Length: 71
Image 1 (cartoon, rainbow, N blue to C red):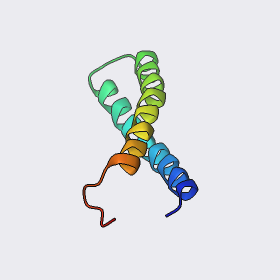
Image 2 (image 1 turned 90 degrees about the horizontal axis):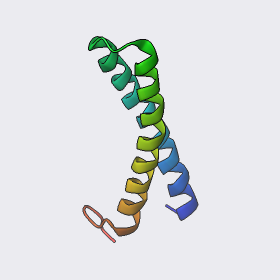
Image 3 (image 1 turned 135 degrees about the vertical axis):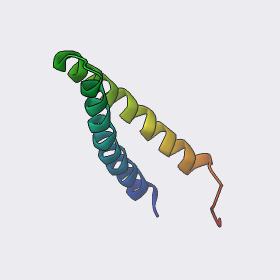
Image 4 (image 1 turned 180 degrees about the vertical axis):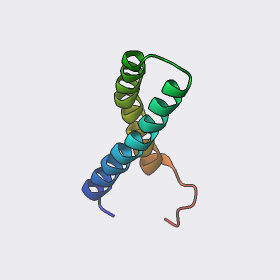
């Protein structure tokens, strides 16, 4: 897989995973009786920070990770 395609794939995986994880965070904060405004703020801040960290993690694994690779 070329580098451009891998970057697009990593961005797509990052966004879809972040949507799933943010939905989980929202549900948990509401279950624990956190007010909706606070829960929304937590989800929005976490959405962008965690998405950035996940993307950087994916790129590091792609560049440096050799576990399970044949090359």
